[in-house]
Length: 233
Image 1 (cartoon, helix red, strand yellow):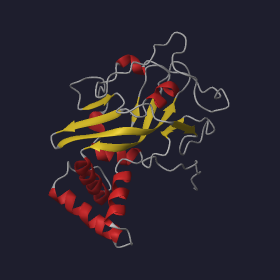
Image 2 (tube, one colour):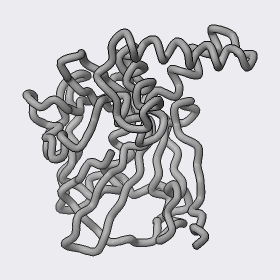
Image 3 (cartoon, rainbow, N blue to C red):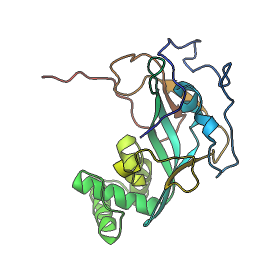
């Protein structure tokens, strides 16, 4: 799912040998505001170029409140997208680790997998499908512990799964993640700044070499990298 920083920029070549963006706090731009854990990010946090906002979102928490309950994920992988001056820029949230509401997230993911579309808020039926999926995996030689670990890893691994686990659909277009009353909110890091790596974005055809994909080093929920593959007609 994309978050749209208010700042925008072109697509410059990355500076420095590390491939990481320049530190935040560029001239004329506000410093990022780091709230206490659990406190919402301030709007000023997003008033920077997308390639600066993106790595700073790693470790932050995206939460979705619904009638069925709350699901929260710690963001573990993002991508920055910027265009010519005067056009919109965005940060794509690619993956996260579920830290609250794992049962509800699993039920949603199971329902979505059965219907190949976002499913209901969960319940006994979704839980039953999740159980049948687990038995199928164990039939391939995985233990209960391995099944549970794989399930937790994959709950919000990739943009589609992330949205399914959180119950995000088109009804949340334009949701204000900085508003305490919003059903979709983003808050500060739950731990110290994680070690971050960067590389090319997934499946991108234009500007494919720019390393604007950022992820938490060693995090199992990070989605696998795939280069762009032209479609055959």
